[in-house]
Length: 283
Image (cartoon, rainbow, N blue to C red; front, side, top):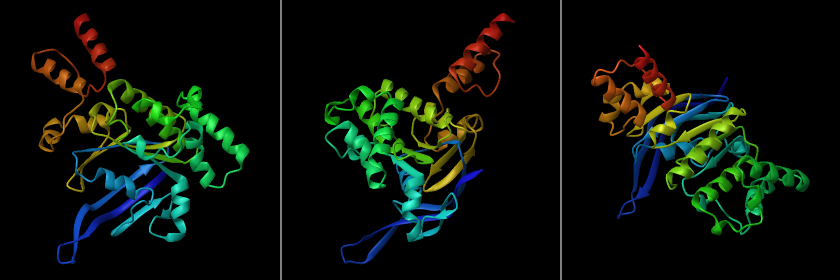
């Protein structure tokens, strides 16, 4: 069932030149796609491709210059829908410091539900559930500035989860983290999705995109490719033309095949490669 529908979306940033005249820069140029309820959709592309601008259009932080964004049937451009849209779609940004507003972890996680007017007793339960869900329950009394980058990002995710949205848009949430932190954040996103949460995950790490159900590839404010991870990463030359790569395991499988190793097409994960190599050796 469809949860997000984007129809012919155009978004322009407008600035004034030295003479005071408005100058428009088109960041999104005629984008259309759907996101199914409960799915995990990855959006990849180079810096400046329009990924983050698109993300902000998905919960009404930015509104279309032209076209429509519909969230569970609600048009984001209609002022009466703004609050409802933001209750349905939460966001987690690249830099967790930009989302942390309180001096104590549990107060920060409670901030969103408090702004929704939730009963204090319910907020207490939501905060505890959200912190346990990201394995940060033992840190509820800590000061966020004392935490690592990965821990801060988990707190930001807990704050989004505590609002109990139907969808979370992750805007490059692992870009500032070390490999361990990236794995932890991706694991949380996948766990939320496994529990029924619709996830839109914007990333420039191809291994993260390989975990999705569906992948959109952006360039120049447009969607250039769309499909399953297996379909997208099979188009290696087209990705290279967009200055994008493929997951390391896909690249390794390709090089092994070039050297004569009998491997099937479409290998996407480490487990698939190990299994294929084991079978090839057995034969």
